[in-house]
Image (cartoon, rainbow, N blue to C red; front, side, top):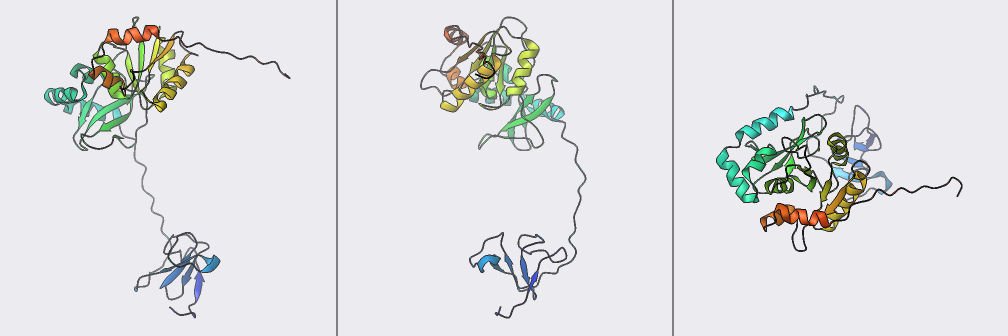
Length: 287
């Protein structure tokens, strides 16, 4: 390319071959180079942008085409979760329960299934007001957790909640809730993260009106901060809200159960925990 190269301003008929925009960029008349201010390269051309040398075969330009794809219907996650649940054979479920240190019956209560296509264990998230599955969290045998595309976070819920005096135990994550269910808390539920699911939890508490709500935080700074924030919110809707956490050196509730915690262990800590108070601050206008 020589200094006599002629440059053309990009347009709809001649978009930038690097960023594909139709303004600001310049294209060599022989289509062998372009100057793009949006995409960096090793050579800068003053304020015009960055020089990009193109292939020896000039790009053929023509009118830009916009391809419209038909909208796809959202997946039926309730049906998908049911298919995953049916695919989890008793032997496979028992082996997974032993790996987690929980009871197979508790995995079944939370609708845990096997998604062979990924492959991963599937934990459905359910809207407490409608009972429909809104999302599915996937836990592969190796690697990080992820979710089925097209879903939304809500809560990990057992098939039914006990209407008696059992406290509502709000845990961080599905496996902590399943561990609590294993040691005898039928109303254990899981939030999707240490800060997620607040609106759904408020809806659930307003719907079921539990006598006591116990927020179980993970034993780290984000977990406890999230537990305290949730407890403060729930004092608006529940009369008795408490916060507990595993003892020092124990990461979360599932690890605590694996280490030997039982329902009496947790009940002792719950009774000793301070009941959160609803604090209202009144100010006088103009003061």
